[in-house]
Image 1 (cartoon, rainbow, N blue to C red):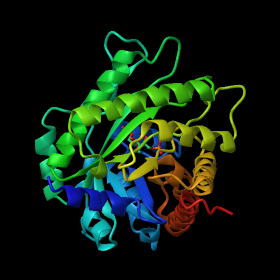
Image 2 (cartoon, rainbow, N blue to C red):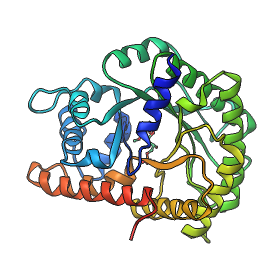
Image 3 (spheres, helix red, strand yellow):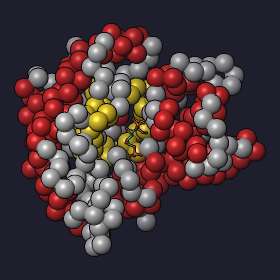
Length: 336
Ligand code: 5MM
């Protein structure tokens, strides 16, 4: 494991103006997205849609890296070029989702635990040889009646730490993603408390398992009210609470925080990112880059414009580049 190499990649992924596109939907998830526009989730359709995104002119000005699902790493574009090589030719770094998804946490109803440690080092070594330079593992924490349990937080944190050290050993920068879901009617204070507890435990385990913090990126949720909360906090409160929580929990040598968009609408996720960066600039003492690793926040409007119809290709690409620029402006706190 070359420490400098890892931290150089991590730093490049959160370069000014830039962030990450999460295009690593597993097959069940992309099927849900395609169902919403009535498109069948075949291997070709998944390839066509992702090729549309990746080949959009100019995205390299806003996108530093793209997280791929394993299938996509080995797919070729319509003119026979590997999609990962298409990305490299634009100086976009290919990454890979390596977890095997969140499964029911047996004995703890309503909670999930992420699987995927078996054979992980060998898989990641192969991904490195096939061009990937970073990886991602997502843990999911649910807020509800009597949950999350401390067992769920602790075990997910241990698994994130084992994943992260294994990833660094294989040469891939780990993106550590503990997502507190926004499903439910909880208050912003509950989200703050659960996120605080979870991030503390995640960094406790990362340190115990000897993960080099300057060679990771953290992919957390923002501090938000639950989706069904009757009294949802506005973007200014979201920004205040998010930065307060991070100052209390995230070590200064982590180079970057790349938010997920979660269950927010795409515009809400962009507005909140902008408010967070505006406040960070005002405060002036944030040690980490505050960027994005958006899936739905970047893709939703493009997916709808495409609608599975090749006649809409250019219109969809135009939508995508506009959305990339907007999210990049928000990442700089410069959304007008
Ligand atoms: C793009 O979706 C990723 C994979 O999800 P599944 O394992 O459920 O298929 C997901 O991890 C994603 O990277 C993050 O949730 C961020 O995406 P959003 O849409 O929340 O920004």
